[in-house]
Length: 538
Image 1 (cartoon, rainbow, N blue to C red):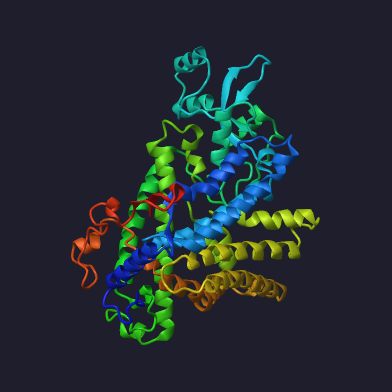
Image 2: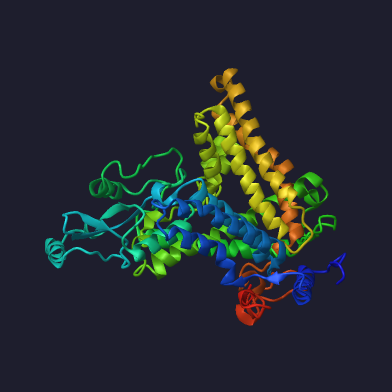
């Protein structure tokens, strides 16, 4: 088919072109749709492998490399030959596929999950024959396994709700379960579906420790050496109660929804966000912005950051709202509020630590555990001091390189004409920027500037450096995302702004998902040439 329109009148016109391109590519066999459940084969392979105890089998331990090879091959095929109809899932195809590879290596290559990891679960308080207690995950939120007499005793004492809850929900560390296949399946699914590890022994350093009463129960029930619990500076504090957690996430979801609608309204008017940076900017912009290349670039970068930030905020509210809200009666310890700290850290890290604080403490840390695993394993293998400067450089640039690889894969799977090298270079320049920032900070300290330069001015220089570095490097990422078509996506099903007449010219729709997502715009059943190529296509 012909190429994209040279001068599209609206973003909707370009979106329809990409829809037609998708239909033509699927019909010709050039690409295949991503279909469920077969797109979950890599995750299923990891789960099935970890369900088999392998500490006593040399062959099963080495079989991890076969699992890893399968995941690499499957992921490469899916990134190269599979696609989706809508723009946002196109991008997610590459990013999520690459992340599955990284997470797989973290769990079964650079770590031995079955022997290295433990998780926090409700402790079964029924005594066993040997006098000890068996640790398992309780599937009833708020429910326990204490004897009925114990429950009656608690009720009789009429203790406060919090104290009663703490007594009933006694926590213990659970290593890899060898006896119960049900416990083992829950353990493995929790591991493979977890990213920040709030209830795991490998918890990422940017989120707070469990509450004090939980830590005390862990020491009481599992002993001080069962697993370590370190505190870190600058952590994101969790919510103390379920009510606070749910209200905070409902508020975040509502704000993010409105912000996404606003971002879409802005982007639908600016050809830059359609992938046409050379077309004239929108006429509603003040002349001092539209006539200045510097201000116009800065404006578009801020809008891009605005859209990315609130898209992530919205997505990350679903997990706590589901597990701690809708399904809280069925998921046991997964409903605990302290397992769902805020996605983003405090903005004070951006002001005080600049570029390094932005990436290490403020930006979401969803992928941190997987990104750090290779460098930590390498540093430990060669006996290098992890606190040394060379070790820190290895950790920083390895993490940014892997993050760049993930987003390069996302670029490669987008519908528009992208350059995957650009997002990779963007992340590598962030590592370089952190290094330069650290060197400049140390030189300033050695010169004694911190003694006679007021702190507000020092912080001003830190923030200025962050923005200047971002101004020159962020277009590597932002331009590529726009060219790929990700901002053509309608992120919300109903647009309040369009409903009151503030939609873009030529597009007055306010019900953006066609009335129902299953009409073929978001998902449909695809019958492929084989049974494993058939399923729900996105």
